[in-house]
Length: 463
Image 1 (cartoon, rainbow, N blue to C red):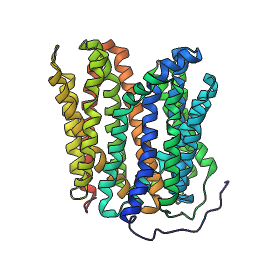
Image 2: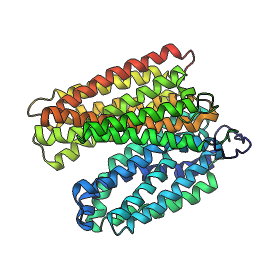
Image 3: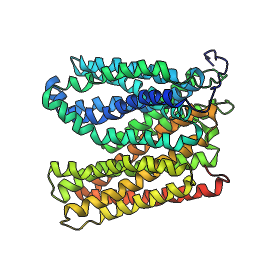
């Protein structure tokens, strides 16, 4: 087995950072997180302009989004594991540097091929940011404020998700699509400078990095995402089966390789902890609901309820906006109340909201739609932060990198599964499939809330 020599462990000198340094470190972390979160939405908005400028077909230009997503998801677990060895702050700063340089490459791209290479590198950089993001938050904030820190983390993601289309449209109103990527450069450089000065050193594991295991993990997750996407786009069933079976085989080989490893890259040691396993499964359910909703709702509003594109954009805003408001509230409450109860209540509210959307009257008024979207946002926001805290706090500190990687992997895997299921609903029922997708989301909410309440039985102490 190829190994990379490990450094001696370095323990943090205190519980969190002093207030002044913490504020600057948080500014660096959340600036980079906002950039990575904005980038998918910005790229989606730019696709028509990119296709026209580079003279490529819509089917080909979609790969501008796909290669970013594949590079991001495939490398989350390897980079999270590497962060446990070399330090989470180094992976974060390295990812931020690569993301910034790749943004420059995107802005200067002269062909689809050059843009795809830059976007793949940008996805790899984003993976460096997201794989250790929550692990860094765990060390920046003192333990008594972890819920608040994770709540602020969720607030940044929700705000970026909400403002992404508006920011992209505003930039395109005054400039060309390369500016959508170039705008990352000054913010990235500022965040790198601040981060180098303020991010805390994190513990270093004594085991070595397994390069072969990293390849297996990347191949497993990459093939899984490609397979789910292929199924959603009605690719030949034979190819879908090959891709998904390949993912399963690589995952089995990875588990077999790491069966005696002190810190396996696919963290089977953490999944033996009931609280961690239930929290990860609940996260996948919640983000599958989000994927189902955010793919199906635009079609539902425009094709079933016959609303305009402008109205659809307005109707989509309350969900992420309310998530941004509720996430810090849920985070503060998670410092006082069991996450099993908070998460279960949040998913019940989310399920109620999905069911209410699926049963909208034929000609609903604007308030009829908005208050249902608000309920969904309240439920998702109330669930997200306590669940993130449960995932991170149920893993020992020296496994924070792998736990952080699972946080991001669960989010992206759930969203991918939800989007694929929504596409399947459309395939079997046309535009009316949106209603089935929303109902399916309500079913996922019931399953997720049951798993959340089960955490009360496996948590003798408040998580």
